Image (cartoon, rainbow, N blue to C red; front, side, top):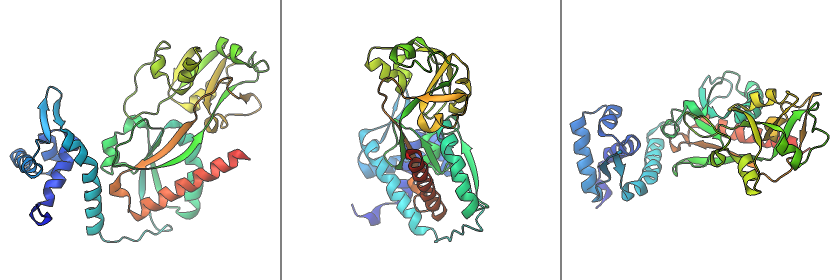
Length: 316
């Protein structure tokens, strides 16, 4: 079959169908009727000689062929969108563009303040809307509703562009009045009372349990590797709050260094963990729909530049 016989609108419809996995919702998003959407699905099935989406007890489920097509569709449609859009100038001094950034609490507290300093100097009218992981889904990023996501990810859709921001080792933050501050080793660490902090995934969080080692994250997975458990007394999803709670004379927060060093002062100090922990990897991800946008390109480069300056400074 030649490309001249393919209705490119069908590829747009398939892209939306694979995101929504629902004919009615896809039709609503595209502004067409449900019968028209159903007819388009029939044409798509004929075009690809595959059912593409099958009704199951969980709703419309993509076939293997559909899953293989999905990342290719994103690339094709992003290229078409770039080709048909006029080239827009982006003026740093004049632009008042609003960028929506999903950032974990860790990324927001360690990266965004330095980013704002750069923006203030070069693009004073730019505005940022910082969203939490609970505010955003991968579909929001994929559709370009959110400009970028800065977080630690276990998984990213294949169609997303991504770049590593930095790798950060862990450290133990505690009050200098903590009885074990000057006698810090694995035994005293395990006997101490601990603050658990983590919220990196997308979507709404759920309650935690000290017994649920498999969901507790990096620190507790590292302890499990050596057959140990820590005494967790409080769970929080905010790195800033964990730093404040570490001022208590009987609590320890084991945090990425960039977050811990925001809180070091005369009363708080840091110690290296008495066991190995895999470093955290902070990444930035964005939709191919925004990859060639001039303002978006500028902001991505600036974020990477700021991250490099922060990590370089931390090594001094």
